[in-house]
Structure formats: C-alpha cells, structure tokens
Length: 257
Image 1 (cartoon, rainbow, N blue to C red):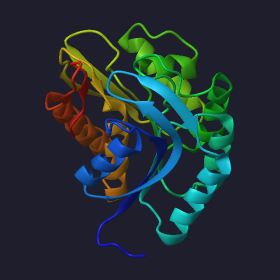
Image 2 (image 1 turned 45 degrees about the vertical axis):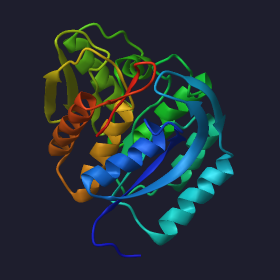
Image 3 (image 1 turned 180 degrees about the horizontal axis):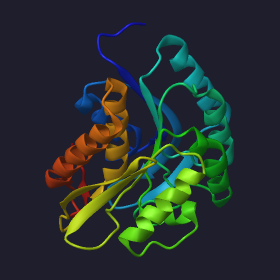
C-alpha cells in the first residue's frame, strides 16, 4: 500500500481515557503528520488519576497484529510503549523489522504507582529490545532501573545514559520530568556527545507526556528529520501540550498536543 505521507507504528497498551497509550500515540502521530498504526499489547482501566486494572493480550495475538500490519505497509519508524510481560517482549523482538528505526519508551510503572511491566520482564527489555533501539526514552526512575544506579545530578544522568548505551541502544533520551529545579531538562546522550533540551517546569503533573514525547520523536523520525531535530521538535510539542492540558473532574490533567 502506498501513501503520500510516511507512516509510523506504535506497539503499546490501550488507555480508555485517551490520555496515554495507543490513543495518545495515534493523536501525536497525526499531529506530526504521519499515518498512525497501532498494535495493542494490553487493555487497561485507567484515567488521568490512576490505573485500576491491566489485562495483557495473548502474545500470539500481538505477533499476528504486527505481521498483518507489516504485510501491508512498512512504517518509517516504530515505537514500543507498555509491553507488560516477557512473552510479549519476545513476540515484539521476533517480529519487528530490524531495518526500521525503533524507539523504546520503557513503560514500567504508572505515575500513580501501578506496575505495568512484570519484574522478570525488565531483564528481557534490556537483553532483547534495547540492543535493537535507535533511541530509548526513559524517565529518571526508569533510567535508574535500567542502568542500575541512582541518579542525583546532571552528571549521573549522563553516566546512566552511557550505561544504557552499553546495553546496545544507539542513543538515550533521559527525560527530566521527575527532576527538580525551575526547568525540565531532557538529556540526549549520543556517541558524538550530549545535548540538553530545556523548558520551564510547569507547576502541575500531566497524564500522557511520556507517550506523547516518544510518539512525536517516532513520527518525526518517520518523516526523515535528523535525531537532534526529532528530539527538539518533540520536546516543543510536549511542552505545548502540557501548557494546554485538559483538566478532569478531580483536577488531574491530560496532555493536549
């Protein structure tokens, strides 16, 4: 199938509130100007405030979704979000094309504290998927888990990113939303050097910012932008979305890219 514009694929969980997961990924893909495709890895019960339940898909169903999509259309880039367990990670590793840039958003725990990835699957992320990653976008807690070190300073961020690259990722973007200070700073760690992206930290949390960022990067990669431009444009889009976030009944906010 041929389109007049590029396509991107998300492999992630479903968020019925529309604030994160595949729903946010598809909205963001559209915002970046690419055709969005989605493979569902899990169903969840959640809103902007909390996750109350999660039901992973059968790994074979995930595998068949990926195969069916790729038989019809080759995406310019692929991202993964919530993968839930070892069996789904294996299915993804075995079916995603190795010549398409892969962006990994290593979703592990929701902001409200609900675990979205089994403990025994973290090693599989590190051993099976990170070596395939064109870019991985952990937040600080996720980067601490993957790098097996505590992050307490900018220097620690760079060191953790280097450790994650040692696992095979080509580049690492460690997000600064969980950091401190007046600015939210994301660090892109590359073999060629490190670059920071800085925006004023806003005085509230939002649901879906991580999904939006990784999806935006994926969409821009699919369009052929260089990696630094992809991260900068994605950071700008997310910042705009945070500034214009929707507010729920309980004052919890969902990003609006």
